[in-house]
Image (cartoon, rainbow, N blue to C red; front, side):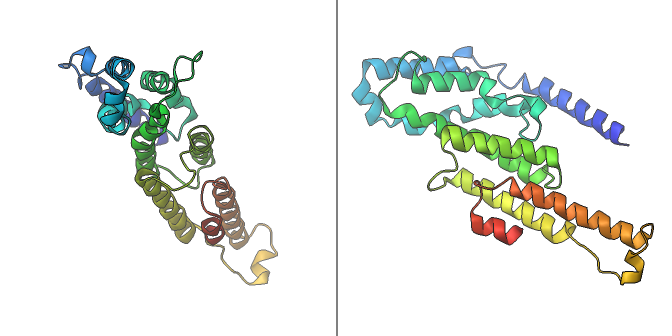
Length: 238
């Protein structure tokens, strides 16, 4: 049964990949390539810096690039380490270079925060959808992959630092809802009379032990959100 479901998921993924290739088939490359789009803004910034700043381009770019970046993120799964890192995708390299230069230079302009803003508007909403619809809080592998991404976003791009943006708030709220729902519905350690638990082979003891270790497993997964969720929320869940 599991093998059949895996085959169906793979087939659906292949169909989605095939259909996605046609999304920008009628669009000139100059208008669907993040690198080429940003090159135009880079020329504007170099030639007319004051005009560029007065137009608040750093605030417009995340929304402008959103559809193209989301398209490139179609194959990225934050719950699987086999799906690769979103930082290896073409859009990320283009935006990072635009915001911070080419490695040998340090640009002095307001676009330094644009990369974080782009990630908040594209990567974080995709993670929210996976948390709401796909993520199993009981899964150790999925929880490790998801928390690793979140810690990376916090350490490298300050996504979870300070006052949270609207996409980050939506993500943390979805996360807490899923964890709370799992605690309420899946954590149950039954109480049996001592005579049923003294016998190691009794079904009551087996079921009690199974539910106990399920609770321990969930507790360990919740603990991985330390430093990402408020301490008060973690204490409530645990």
